[in-house]
Image (tube, rainbow, N blue to C red; front, side, top):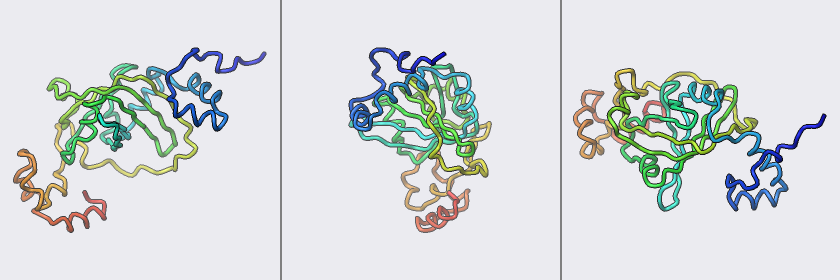
Length: 230
């Protein structure tokens, strides 16, 4: 008995690939393979095993693009399971206190197109999720994530597992002390103690530097950062 080739299960017309991807597939004799890969690994919603994998992750990489087409990638971290699987078609995650730039949040508000990369460096294993994002400050939703200032919801358009052969193995050592606790509390970051930033800090951060070790210079912060103290 012979196996049916994967391409037989592909729809006649797929919009998964761009013209650019098709160009390089043609140049490298991989068009058929690329179509077979879509059939084999790409889905429009999370299977149980993929949802379970996300529920164990304590970080992911978030790719966004602004209205002018300029991209950025950011690291998002939290306690294991901080990305909630709302349904097989929807994810939700918190945005915690940062440097006030809100680049990823602004990009998602402008264009909504996102890519999420979840990695297990110890196994290794990785999962890619693509979709459309919406950003909310709804109080009811914020209660799901103590310490969050915004909530992001992702409507999934596709997800797939990639070959992990080029992932370098790393060993996880400890949680970040800055992940908000169950009450939403977290340590005051060292960079907010830099003297030159004091006049422009948000009102909620004004005056807290003295209570958290005192003011420091940019050079002193650089020394702390080089020791892994942020």
